[in-house]
Image 1: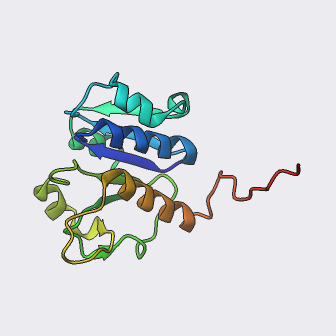
Image 2 (image 1 turned 60 degrees about the horizontal axis):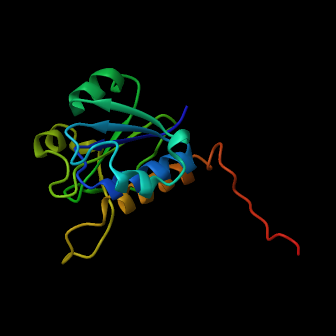
Amino acid sequence: MALNIVLVETEIPQNAGNIARTAAVTGCRLHMVRPLGFEVSDKYLKRAGLDYWNLVEIFYYDSIEEVMDKYYDGHNFWFFSTKAKNIHSEVKYKDGDFLVFGKETKGLPEDLLKKHYGECVRLPMREETRSLNLSNSVCVGVYEALRQLDYIGLKTEGEIPKR
């Protein structure tokens, strides 16, 4: 199993590339919901993902409903939003969970948030700020879930090479 990152109508190729790199280094699957604000062949997308594209399992969908119809039974979905009341670090993540993020300019659709409000989580931030960058939000969410799962499947130690 692995965590799943879901990007709903992401608009900025550099964010998607950074998120793909996060998926590659953590072993997460990446689910991208159209429409996207760029072409998948976009040079900025490729550059931000560096040479990790071969390590990312990517799936494409035409709607968030398509993703949920396929996976909702038996999997937890966590909807990241500034409108949520639950803090992302207070919920209990499980291997195979889906972490869902909206587009940079509007976030996730409000009707989706209302329908799943108990599964909505937020990253704490100052009141006078609007939101954290999408790729940073994904990284924070993914690493909190991985921390709770004891970083399963990830190398947790490094060493300084001897000269």
